[in-house]
Amino acid sequence: MARVVVDVMLKPEILDPQGQAIARKLPQMGFEGVVAVRQGKRFEVELEGPADDAALERVGKIAETLLANPVIENYEVRVL
Amino acid sequence: MDAARVGVITFPGSLDDRDAARAVRLAGAEPVALWHADHDLQGVDAVVLPGGFSYGDYLRAGAIARFAPLMTELVAAAEAGLPVLGICNGFQVLCETHLLPGALLPNAGLHFVCRDQRLRVENADTAWTSEYREGQELVIPVKNRDGRYTADRETLIELADSGRIVARYLDLNPNGSLDDIAGICNEAGNVVGLMPHPEHAAESLTGPSTDGLGFFTSIVKRLVNA
Image (cartoon, rainbow over all chains, first blue to last red; front, side):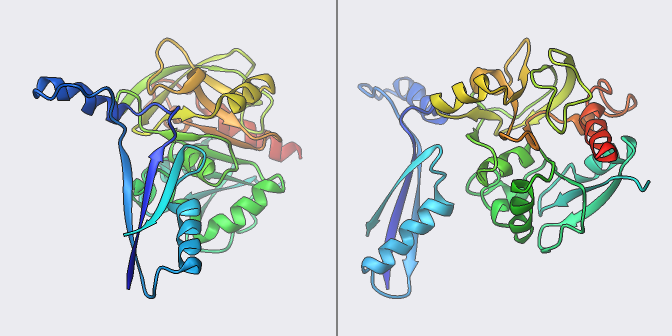
């Protein structure tokens, strides 16, 4: 059984007010030196079989059709 | 002639399906309850996708509702010209299906916003706005968490240039929507997405105005004259 991770992030040009709220809080907590925070989503997909090319292609299709909305988000698929 | 039949789809988590059905009736049409898990549009003449939180808005607003069984029939029918109005969550579903361009993201202020909102009708030629006139101002409740309309620059320019921005927010942009967009339509004008809730402004007893009724009388008039 293999585990594949799909990371989904808002495209860089799209405003991320949640990330901004996090970034604004950091100096108040004493954490200096952070320029920006972007918040995304991580999915862990467990496969029945091995994470071979066919399986990764299938996960890519899942990411493209459901996990991410390509209009606003980018995604990356990687084997854990 | 028989009254026009306007379907209202109920998804798990829909909230405003009954109000939408009531507005359809007030406008003089027969509301037809449609169930998300069926594969049958029951021969309706138009469809409303109501507000709410279909599938709890899990993943993204509208992301899972988009794959509801009935959506297969709805997308095909909309592409063939069936008038479809998506209100709030319904607008989000229409964007997720790509019947409408762009997407709706969490409000820029990160709060759920509920207020009586002033709007301007920008396009009075769609299937759902013909009873208004261009430039007409309306007061209709807006109530959403994910109402920030977003699209890439090219899409925004195309929407503006081709008259596909149906309504804009006035006075105050409640959610950070780009270009103050409150509603848009597809190229043919039969599919309209609207973030504010016209079905909540259809009766003076419960709404801030009856300004919303025009969306429903527009479709009824169109269907009767068809």
